[in-house]
Image (tube, rainbow, N blue to C red; front, side, top):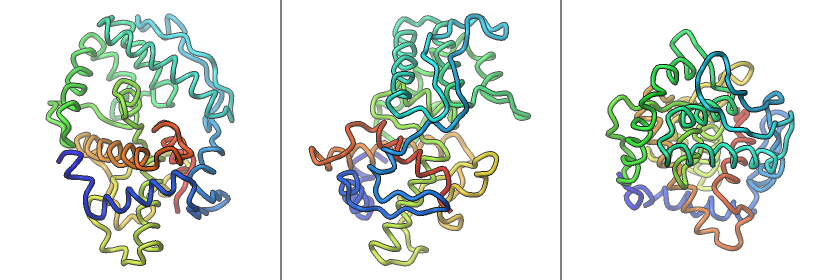
Length: 285
């Protein structure tokens, strides 16, 4: 499915409602102690949720990567503070990708994963050992996704696609108009779609269109089980290819909503919309 095929019917209607929301139309979000009267209010409340974090040193834990120098983030850092770090990471990633600098490319990817708190080793592998195994051919792996994405379809044809909560951050900084589709952003999209369908349109939840049933991702710790507005409606993502599909559809939806919102939008970029969704998505039920 391409962009034009996706943004039709009820999806287009939801996009139009989102465009009004980007202009500041009220969106009464209240879950637990979190209350946002609108999407701009959620963006303005953004605060770095993780512990204070600096970039990775050179060398680090015996890996030969060349890590970018990035300013540290304090706990509770603002969206503007975070933007400085992301700009540094994005510049390093794109420069290394353009120059095909193997160790600098691996270092930039490691830095992005570290920033996102997902440069880890898990019982099933994890991003850190995966990067160690694949850093030598990382440029080819990333190029395959970039070229595949350029085809304009929401189905990936990349063999052995690596796509998870870590790699969505890498692709978001490598590819233009590509958001980070993690558990928080996905959770917010489920809440918004569910709210629009049941409270704005006043329709039955079970009839929510398939193309608005955003795929969800599990959360760790105390947020586990709280990042799906309607578990019986919005499916969990279990395969990389499905994660890719929902990431691409979210890109189309949000970028088109931003375009439609025009000069009245209180958001300047997709990254700002992503930040609002991230803030809302800590818990949606």
